[in-house]
Amino acid sequence: MTTTSRVSNETQLIQAAEAAAKSAANTSASSSSSSSSSGSTTSALSSLANNYTTFLSLLTTQLKHQDPSSPMNTDTFTSELAQFAGVEQQVETNSKLSSLISLNESSQMTDSTALVGQKATASTTTLPLQNSSASLSFSGTSGSTVAIAVANSAGTIVKDVVATADSGTNTWTWDGTDNNGHQLADGAYSVSVQTISSTGTTSSVPFTVTGTITGVQKGDSDMELEMGSATIPMSNVTNISSGTKSSTGSSSASS
Image (cartoon, rainbow, N blue to C red; front, side, top):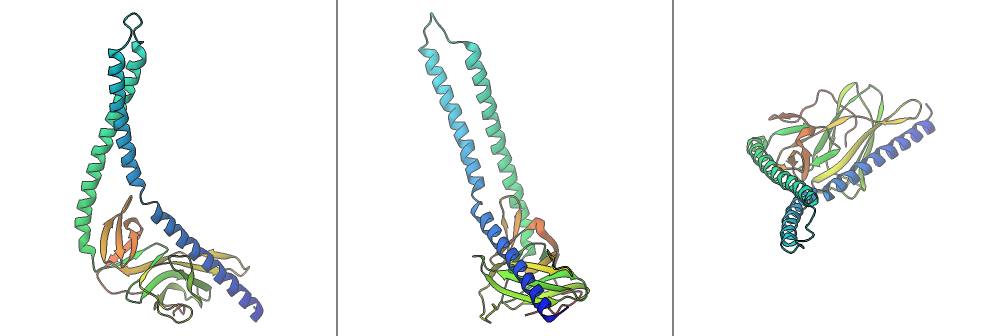
């Protein structure tokens, strides 16, 4: 491969990695903005309950003032009454179910507090920078070229590297400095790992990130682990250990 061709491939690879990291940052921002959905559900249930009460009031008033010589068709309001009764039962059922879920989550949170201080490995695009250090691992093929791009919460690329992977597990450690050598604040960043084939086709490389658990909180649909200001759904966690970070291989992709 000529020098010009290699440079062209690296440029293409970096661009692919940066685009994926920006997309991950935008997806994370969108997820955060939709966290109020559970509140709207509660409001809807309350509205249904109020409508049921209003219906009963209107019905009894109408019955009191109907024309005796031309009474209401009982089939109509009986059907409506049955429908609203079903709605009331559903509202009550949902309310009790929410209480049960809340109690279960509280129990899970109590049990999960023992995880604080341990190391967690997760399959996620969220890269937690803690104490100016972050790391990720991926499986590579000897001699393959990979690009790693990191974006901040605004979707701006702050770090990218190109490296040659080793065979087996590769670990990339980031010291929190940007492309200009400036130290960045701890927090949640978005990351992508890409590789390129001999034909010039780029593709994503599966990876996991590692961080220290600093807390546990309730998510919209799952318990979440806190790693500094980064939050990782419990369902994304693949391993938890009390030891120090370790890797089964090495990579030249280090900064």
